[in-house]
Length: 285
Image (cartoon, rainbow, N blue to C red; front, side, top):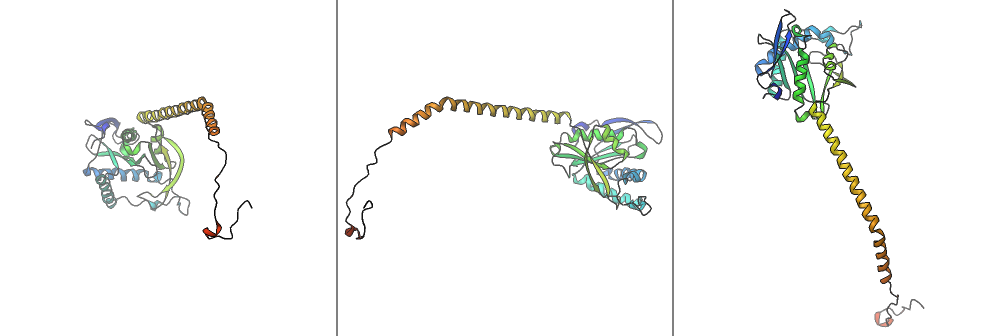
């Protein structure tokens, strides 16, 4: 299914390929299962180029003080086959949604995946955002993020917002800062798929879109209206009680006086022998 913002024709953006410098049009679209291998290629190419940056938050430095380069495995054909299967499962399962950027030649040059958050209820989460090294620093990552953000804004599982966990101190996080995403101050550690070492990550939360802001404003105005109506009802009840209090109390006093009678009681003659209690005597002596 096409997200509303990607309804054909697909969204296109102008980017310059770093390899040739030529101004080219990259098209954003929803991928199919046949794109899994190219998505995996972009993923591995980004790791091959920026693995050190992606592991910058690693908490397991080597004995010399440098981070252990063996934490990232060799990204060869075997890794490509493994990741292709992994992305095929993602695409087939549907738990994550994908948008890819397609170069004019027809190959995938970037992608973003997102879905319901694992850590925040009613939030969408950006799971992955990768651009092939030859297409980086041209605004393609921002285009992918904008497209995913728009789509999450229409999802019932993201009614409260969107967020992402990014490698701590990674320069690539500026794609979120530029789009108005802000650090929340929360940090944790994750073990990346291509590493055996835990990496420190920080949380960014996305800005509310127009629909979200309208919903929040509407909820606030409705809450204020309900509070005002409730207060008005309480005041009305208080006024009614204040007006009727004296007549009610006067009526109760009148009824109380009218209902008082002398405590005469009844006198009954009882023979103790007949009732089986010959030792009984009168209570008043």
